[in-house]
Structure formats: structure tokens, C-alpha cells
Amino acid sequence: MSTSRGGFSSRLGFILAAAGSAVGLGNIWGFPTQTATNGGAAFVLVYLVLAFCLAYPAFMAELLIGRYGQANAVTSMQKMSRTQWQKHFAFIVGFGGIVCAALILSFYGILAGWMMSFAIEPVTSLLGFNQGSTWLTSQSIARNLIFTALFMLLTISIIRKGVEEGIEKWSKRLMPMLIGLLILLIIYVFTLEGAAEGFSAYLNPDISRVFEPGLLISALGQAFFSLSLGTSVMIIYGSYISKKENLVSLGAQVTLIDVSIAFLAGLLIIPSMYVAQSQGVAIFSDDGSLISGPNLVFDVLPTLFDGMGAIGLFVGFGFFVLMSIAALTSSISMLEGPVSFAVERHDVDRKKATTYVGLGIFALSALIVLNFDLLFGLVIAISTVYGQPMIAMLCCVFVGWIWHRSDILEEIKQGNDTVQDTLFWKIWPWYTKFVCPSAIAIVFWHSL
Ligand code: PFF
Image (tube, rainbow, N blue to C red; front, top):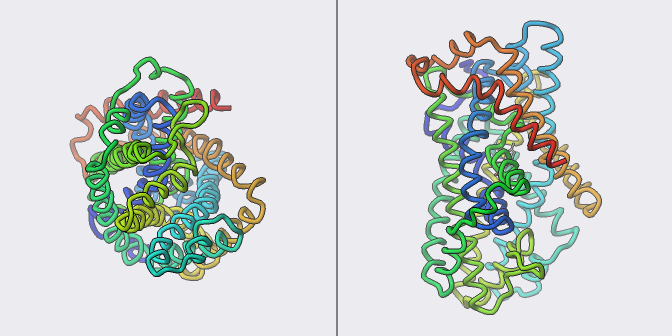
């Protein structure tokens, strides 16, 4: 590992940073919401299978590219290329991922800003600043711009410090807080009336829905978004891992943490909705499905917290702090992709690169805030519906078809001498070559 570019100082540092990237609003908001709209436990079941069978192999491909290249996404992929056209292809895939990460951060920063403003609201309520509370929880351009800017400043300040002092240190602080808060909230919600009904709605699968194309597409999209695939993020995080580490087990541990936290988030959100129902809050929309999307997080849950009296202020505070932390550990990974590219390819000082790239992405967020109806959905669609699956698929094609099998083995053997005799090595190369690209292509085609 080159000392000048930094790297994770420990295995735990990598696991928490990569899990921090993976665990975000996608897990705590997206996953329960998708579960609510796609038949409860049937979705959970399909998600678990797809996360391990399709997202994990693709995730391993990205980690391996990075660890082999020990550089940003473009340089790493170009190191694997032998011919000129492969180098061009590497540039398109690597740079495409970096652009995708920047686009995702531009809308994610807005959502995270909402979480932060809702986290502050219980404090203003407690202090009796009612007008302040109303402002914090109402949509306005000023509020959105201010809180997106605040969130971007936090993200920039962590990334300016580099890999070990910034990403690793903060992931080690924030991830345990996130897990602790999540568990505390689940325990509290479980003591409330109505939670048991939510629990059984969450865990009873309607098996007839398991093969519905819509459900499969949503579950795969969710798994890819959740593991931050197709964004260059796992390539760059992979490049900071020591050659002594066993990548196969590191990747599996991160996937397991990501999936488990999504599952736990479902245990919090779905029972909370049924608790809200038992307090008279409507939780079903007109078509009979559970309310999801922004209404769930910004209407149903706050109404539930309000109905809890004084303790609701603390529960609401805990919930939105949880959301903000989850967003922050993900946003730092999104900023690291473009920043590492600027530092390594254009020789820009890290602090300067972070500030310029961060401000550039904030300018994009501001543009979205000012043209919300036009741009918000569009940027989400371009980056997550089209960009991520396409880039993730091309990464698999790169590893499966361009990189030589013997070179892959040489790389993966570092830190894992006996990998050749494992089930992983018997299955994964074929999987990455044939199954992953075709499955992603089929699902992508259907979603169009
Ligand atoms: N995995 C994050 C989540 O589930 O919220 C989102 C994400 C992070 C997407 C980093 C893309 C990315 F590069």
C-alpha cells in the first residue's frame, strides 16, 4: 500500500467504513419502504437471496479491482487493461462510476438535510420555539438549501482529513452509535401497543408474490443501491485495504452487516407504523397498500412521536439522529470517489480537491432544490435506475472477460492462500462472467 495515499489501518476500520457506506438511508428508509409496498416478508426473502447471490459477487468484483490497482477507479481499471480499447473502456466505466457517485450525493445531501432538520426540531420544541419547529419541518427553499449546505460541510470536513483520520476514525465512531440507537429504538417500539401486529405483517411472507417481476426488480435495485455498487466507491475503498487481508471474508462480513441492518430497520419501521395505526394514524393509502416514501418518514412517524407525549421528543430525536448518521457515513464514501480521482489523476492537494468537488456537488444540489419538481426524480432515475446497474454490470464484464483468471487468482490469493480450494473460487469466477452480467441486464431491461 502506498503510504502517500493512505489506507485503512485495520480490518475493523475497513469493515466499519465499507459497512458505513453500505448502511444508509437506503437501509433505514428505502428497505422498509420497499418492504411495505412489495408484500412484506416476501420482499425480505427475495432481497436476502439477491443480496447474497447477485450483489455480493458484484461487490467482490469491485473490491478486487480496487485492491489490485491500489488507486482510484479509473487508474485501477486501466492497470488491468492490456490494449488501447480496453484502456478507453476502463476510463468510461471508472469515470462513469465517479459521476454516478457525485449525482447520488447531490440528491442524497438534500434528503440528509431533511433528516438533520427533523432531528433539530424536537430540541426547538422542547425550548418552546414553536415557529422554529414549524420552519424546520415545513418544505421551503431556504430550509432545504441551509440544511443541504450544513450536511455537505460535515461530509467535506471528514473527507478533507483523509482515509485514516477522516473516513476510518469517523466510521468507527458513528457506526456503533447507529447500531446502538437502532436497537434501543426497536426495544422501545416493541413495548407499545400494536407493535406485535406490525411484527407479524413484516415476517409473514406472501409466497405467491415472490416471483413477481416488479418485486424482483425492486429487490435487486435495492440490493445494488445498498451495497453502493456501480459508483466506484467500493473500488476506492478496496484500494485502501492491505494486501494481507482476506477479501472474500471481508466482503462477506460487510454484506452481512448491511443486510442485517436493513432487516433490523424493518423491525423498527413496520411495527412503528402499526403502533401509529393503533393510535388512530392512517397507515394505508387509498389503494390498500402501506404508506411509503416521504409520507412515511415525515408524516406517519412524526405523528406517532407527537402522540407519545414528552418521551416522543426523545424518540423522534433519536430516530432522526440515526437517519442523519446513516446518511453521513454513506455520503463520505460518495465524496471519496471523485476526490481520489482529482488527487491522483490531476495532482490536486487533497484538502483543496475535497473543497472544490464538495462545493461543485453542492451547487448541483442547489440547482435541484431550486428546480425540485423537474430535477429531483430525474437525477435519482439517471443515477440509481440507469447508472448504477449499468456500471456495476460493466465492472463484472471487466473482471469476467478482460482480466485473466490467473491474474485474478494471484490477487485474491494474497491474504487468502487456500482460496483456490474453496467453494468461492469454484463458483465466483463463472458467476461474475456469466450470471451477474446477464441477471443485471435482464432486470435492467425489465425496469426500462
Ligand atoms: N448504500 C447507501 C444506502 O443504502 O443508503 C447509498 C449509497 C452510498 C449509494 C454510496 C451509492 C454510494 F456510492
